[in-house]
Length: 215
Image 1 (tube, rainbow, N blue to C red):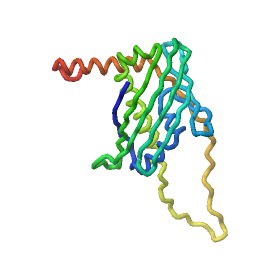
Image 2: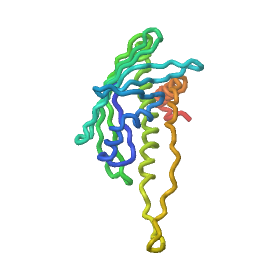
Image 3: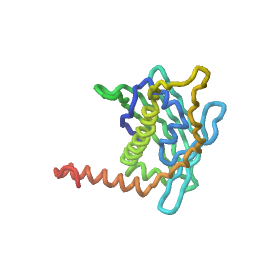
């Protein structure tokens, strides 16, 4: 299954590429994804949690990420399997970054090219709704990445006002922030994604029939 797409995130490419190099941070933007340990060769062990109504299915596998900081490009190669009618998936993804023209504040365009091989019960799904599913998943990832990267912009320090204090009086230390545990990954709702896929297909049918976008 071949897929190409692009989306935008806030920031310049030279900053965004470093954020993409933070594998654990980027994994938190992927619905249902979680990373565990890293091998000596750099490969990460992890999983992807998907819900089908009340039932939860977890794909377990490995992912290897390479980032070219100078070229603003990267690759993600992963494979996983679930105990569900021999469901297996192997994905090879390439991305490149470039500055969005005339964007104020600066934005970066992320262009994706991926090829996925799905076997078992997933093979039929890839032939019928795989493209639309990948589009919806990319849109959800981009929404989360935009929200995540916006935190960096909001965290830019504001110049402090000069306070009057005695010559022997030490400067006040900022209050310590309590340590926070990383949030648990939210499972991908297959029902929700399939509904989004259906709406996308319906929109295409309406445009084909000349009625514009459905309301």
